[in-house]
Image (cartoon, rainbow, N blue to C red; front, side, top):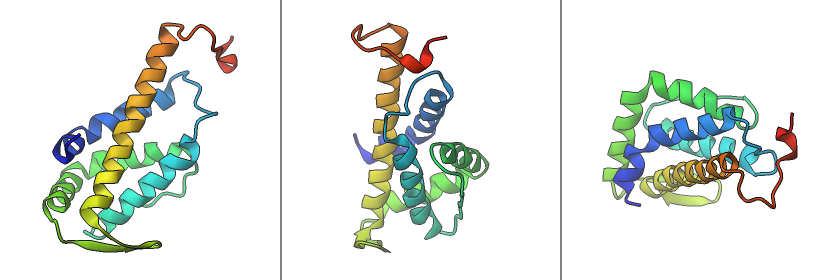
Length: 142
């Protein structure tokens, strides 16, 4: 997907992920408790270079809700920074593993949120359709 489309769908992807995490969908066996906070921190690192400061010590997937609330309060500024980064083809940033393009770092974060939203949507649809039949969600049984 093109970077502009990822950027434009970011808010929707956050809402989709938050909705899935708030649903009865069983995600305890998935890596989201680790990957979501890491990806949010990496995204916050990119935004911090441009004067936007998001920090949260909330563990696990709950950090997404902190970020979503912060994003709602700073949406215009965040979108302006994202747009500027995606347009800049020469800005670099130092990371623990070396130096990378800010655009590439942001693009990978946006891509992660798109893929996570899509995966969770598919899982929710499968659960609503009681499909696949061979898989049982033991934590959902009343």
